[in-house]
Image (tube, rainbow over the protein chains, first blue to last red):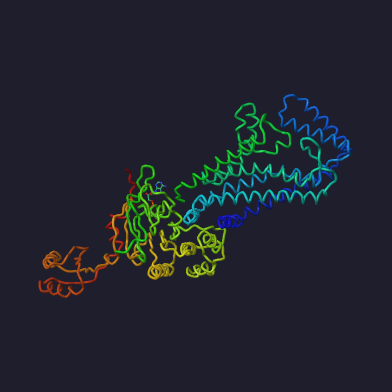
Length: 314
Length: 307
Ligand SMILES: Nc1ncnc2c1ncn2[C@@H]1O[C@H](COP(=O)(O)OP(=O)(O)OP(=O)(O)O)[C@@H](O)[C@H]1O
Ligand SMILES: [Mg+2]
């Protein structure tokens, strides 16, 4: 199996597009940081509010949210945490990270994860389909290796590429932040459910990155399935990207119906449990993870069945 | 042949939709023997080969390679097979060498040395580090042959392998196949349209038409000696020759006599005595092509048979 993955990895990096996407990711991240820096210096905010003023306003807003009686448990806990943190900061004179600092950038690096998803979809949709369109599939399948092993090696390679992109995202965000804004002052505080504690921005950034990787994983798997079933990379990539954008919109349309709880895109963003923005009521992290795993199993089963049974006439 | 067959194709059938593409094919292939697989366009050669290597599932029947079923123990059976199905497609964005490295990793125990050896055998040493995308058709065929030979297969299946090779390449290829068949005991199965090529290359020919195996012949049998008599008057000469027991048939403006060379002087003497004018007597070698057309009934593409 290791040799098969080695093969796929070699093929992946023999194509220019794989390199281009990694470089493009780095360029986009450096570019956004650079533009932010430029905007900040060209148009500085006049009379910026002190951090105490900002924190007081946020505290007031979060307290008002808590008065809403229809909050779900997850949301209530989120606002309680935010209130506790704000109070703690004001009492002990502990400022948060400046908005444009490397540390804040690392914590929020996951917001750029959709680029990783996009690039992963391009690889996932093409890795099986391209073997068919190039006709190399017949050379690949006439070896003493069972088909499921070949498919597995392709899937693992796709996910390795996705993980690599996520790591590049994390490192480049930190680097760009350091170069353009410096590390920045401030402390990072979290609410552990009963008290406010100081946390590491590296760990927080990695945690959020890992949570948002769930959507890369499941949408990548979906594109992989489409590429395997339809043997057309353009169809697989196009359809996956289309669904990626419209799918999340549909969550809001479906929000009032029971079915939304079993809908894939309600659960693709696991960071929602830490950012307080949960568009659907009564869902929990556990439930999301279970739903994602069920979809994963369905996507994989369809991929393996079609790939294993198909008559190859390419 | 009394020897146990290396490859047994057993009652192989394929139906797609309502079309029966391959019909109950039975064929044995032996060690050290080169078998040609001949048939008009659309006869089912490629489909048969695809089923032999597991690319397509047979609707009925099975293929045994060295006793192992392709259907039930795929890995063990296909291990011994080297194959080119139609044009060998390679990864165009990688060099020839990387392509071979890629396929070598899918077999057990192929060393770098073995790759170099095969590259040398197919005469690709000078271009092996260039991207496949820049190769000519003939070079791609050679690389295709290299990937099929990489693991020293006991059984080699080639679907129209000489397509795109130059005459020197074809000759080299033929001599090479005959060598590995003779010296290493490899069983070779070659489909081709180049009938003259098959005639030179093969020991045995299997003819397929409309998905049915219609004939299996040894090449020697096909090349039995015949003589063409250009004589006049034709009818009288025919009567005389068949009268003394020669198998005679008319061919163009002469008579075709199936016999050995030693009987010719006697036959000529009899004809001279009977006052027949003899213009020419020459050995007649019908090409395989004529016989092939005779067997398959003309040059039409096989019609789509429905059940
Ligand atoms: N996927 C398919 N669906 C329907 N019919 C098919 C399919 N594949 C092949 N056929 C039919 O099967 C028959 C045999 O095709 P095959 O490619 O095996 O012929 P062949 O002997 O290799 O021909 P050629 O000499 O042209 O290469 C043809 O009539 C073809 O139309
Ligand atoms: Mg063919």
